[in-house]
Image (tube, rainbow, N blue to C red; front, side, top):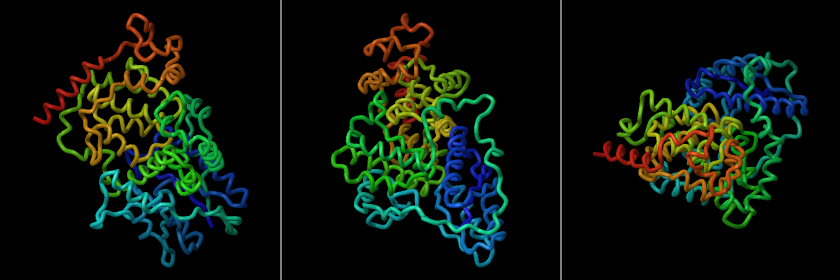
Length: 431
């Protein structure tokens, strides 16, 4: 077996790996290389057209088959088709569905069609559970006598250098398969309380398995079998989060451009453009909106490459509804900043919050960030990521008075003003 990873930025176009994803990829490949080394194997690294590079390695080694995980991003689907055509005679392309509970297209409606709405899809997936058996790691990996040439991982320059902005990510994360399994064991002790803790950013009640799952360092099948013995609503809620990953892939399999094109027509006139909108967007990205819960989330994203899920919804809703800025600008920012940036999840989540998706929250349901912050006890979370507010009491930190804010910025738009502006803009496009 010749393990290979090809870094193909050109195929993905504007969805090539973002800066945070490249950081994680470096450490994930480094970890995989160490694991393979224990089996006297190694990973071959190539950069360029994935289909061409894999076909070249197949010819060089006389491979009988190329095995790969099936992907559903439109550029990888094209690459899979191109690879099948490019392989030498006698070499087979074998695609496996290894990163989801149920591969897209396998769970269908009673009439044989694809589900578009999450709730019936989730129920149908649950009826198929448990998933297939978890496969053990191989005891031995047979290696070739001669290895194909390989790039050096450091030569790809995936890590930031000038400046090195990844210090917060190094402190927050450890990538690789071993770290993924260790995190799963830790989460197995906490998942029972997930129904409550998932909404409390100060308590850190998230599994933090998302980057490990996204990069294939652990399988959702392994996660399911490890946790399914838990009783109670915590596991039941978390199971639906795993199924949401499958739903996102089901969606992009049906609508390949979903992360860049609104499913519902008529929203283009809703979004603000121009210098003022650009200034508001910049303030949002820097965590300088004057809303502590929003700013804490955006700063956590920049520092760690990740954001608590409840806060993701609050921050995304604020951009789309309070600021009336196109959800696609937020999608692109998250794509570059998230270590778990996933084409399907990112697009589906942004279209859900913006009201433009096939299955989405109504645009007129506007989250109140100050109410959300207090309701979900975010004081400790705000102190961690907005340290200039650290001395405020639990009661006052969610919305400090203007005279007490000091260097912390005033709100760039009042909640009532932003809400009324959003509703008026929506009524206008709906006639």
